[in-house]
Image (cartoon, rainbow, N blue to C red; front, side, top):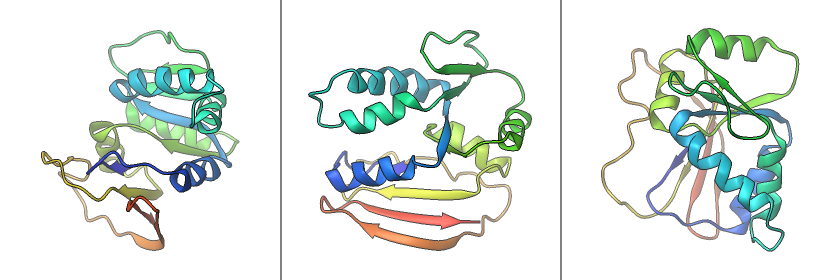
Length: 166
């Protein structure tokens, strides 16, 4: 989750993102995020001159699943659309053989995953300037969410990554 207080990004954050995708074979998105994320990173992956080309290529290589009750067919390569019961669909994905699943989802999608107790680890990236109208990812929680701090990493641009597990 990127708690976007500013849009600062540096090469250390890109390197972390690439490394963090090493053991991932599925990226989950809500509809709104998928509609922006997938085309953007596909364009970056197709442009070898883009400073984030290596990260874009990794995002483009990993299959995507977009959760939507309005989209029926995918217009993107390497992407499926999943409709219906969110909790059942996620449990089915988690029960498949394979690597890890990561979420680049959007606040309401991630909030739904939290409400259904479907997230095992949290990587929270906080940038150092406030823009207002805070995100509602953790609001409202039905049950207390007990997390254990695994790691905290600062980046040169001032952003901080906090990694928690359940």
